[in-house]
Length: 219
Image (tube, rainbow, N blue to C red; front, top):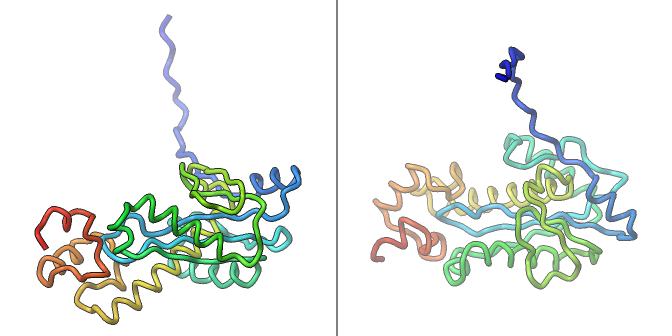
């Protein structure tokens, strides 16, 4: 028997907003401080990878927390100040381009996460991490959540702190290396950035020589 086709209008599914459900579940099991962890800057051709760790105050969760990629730059800046003012604890750490080249980007990102958690003023009881991997050497148990920045407000808050911090770092670096336009693309492989690298050459300590196209050429 042939199934008839539906004539209903197919509406796009709205992406879910992060909430406090994962944190609340851990708190019900007796965990007091839950830290959200995320990073920014895995893909760029220049600059560090930056990670942030945030322990939100359950009584003062900022409105509008979301995956940093789904927010405007202005809204990220606004939320950055709100998060740092209301969170119980937060910390940011980075791993430089030369250190990324010495290992690989995944290991560097996980190391930045470990450093961020170790920089917290409060020892967390559990960590929620965006992605598939748990950073080694954390001072607490941890759970990796795929698309965690769209599921957990703690991870979303960390994604905002990491993104804003890295963007600010790259904008400041752009003042010293104005030929590369870092303040506009934050080190990502835009056409302008690639052309500038080809014309002026890469900068030691800034560019990632283990990333294409630099790893494919003689320096």
